[in-house]
Length: 435
Image 1 (cartoon, rainbow, N blue to C red):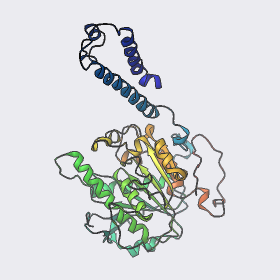
Image 2 (cartoon, one colour):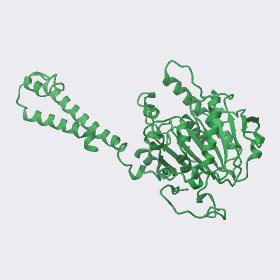
Image 3 (cartoon, rainbow, N blue to C red):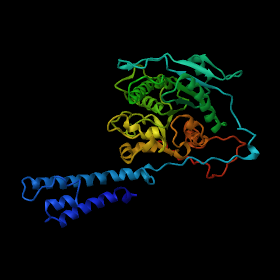
Image 4 (cartoon, one colour):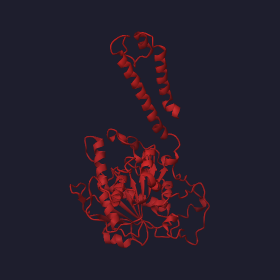
């Protein structure tokens, strides 16, 4: 791979240098014939300025050779097998073939399996502010599902707080851009079914945060994307306020998609003591010290924003684990660097680079990466993810807090009727390191 990338270019430069040495006594007319296009400004011997021009040309060749050598490893790292620094912790399991004997049995539910989730909207909240701190938002709460129907109805925060079962994790799902209210309701229902079907025997409170991400009329498309990106980061203040209202005995997991990843990282950065665009929360959260884990899908953020001194360098401080779903085939992430001059690669496209790993240091123990390219393919929208049950099963330890490290006794309690199943290729072993 290395030779295929820069071998022909290096050999060409070497041949050019050898040709110059062999034909050093040739006339300027012969040099022009031997090396057209590069030595078009060659003058006759004895002409003033010939030595300086030779020095400039030789130096330019050396600079080009150094640039090729510097660019080749970065290109090769995107196509070759991952190095130990960027090695994926475990692969997403392959699809499990359906068993005809248990096809009609349905999932076994040890908890309430009826549709019951919440939608919290910030669409009516301010999306910009000139203040140094951001005040509370007047959230609108909707509950979907009840004992009689699955229709959504308005609620208040007290109703939501009373519905929380002690010790049950709370999962916040944040959508990306170009999602209106109708699409948010539809995707919320399907996402809830996707998450609950992965682990019907485990309890989970699911909350969907929706923010005003409709298409904005701008002259240039990249201006629209930049505006929505800033708006998603601003809603990180509201997400941090919501997390601060949940009692600390409830673990909190976050699932962000596309620009929703920026909302997630902004909230974690604020809870870690950072400032977003020079602003901070006006009031400290009522509760703090939650156990937090985050999953980033189609992350439309720069790969280096979590490094020390960068935009969200405090985001990893409150987190136990951060899962990055990589997709090298996502066309939207391919053009992500073109939104501005000298743009950086998207995190879900490149993953954490070697330079990022070196700068993060001990925080690498919190990072987990899944390669979902063969499952999602060239899709970027959220339905491409929630239509794949394999991805949901791989995320169970991080959304449900179901791994053994969640329990202080060292072993996770299991119902008496469960039997220990041998590990197969369709199961993904937990390789999470908790600090």
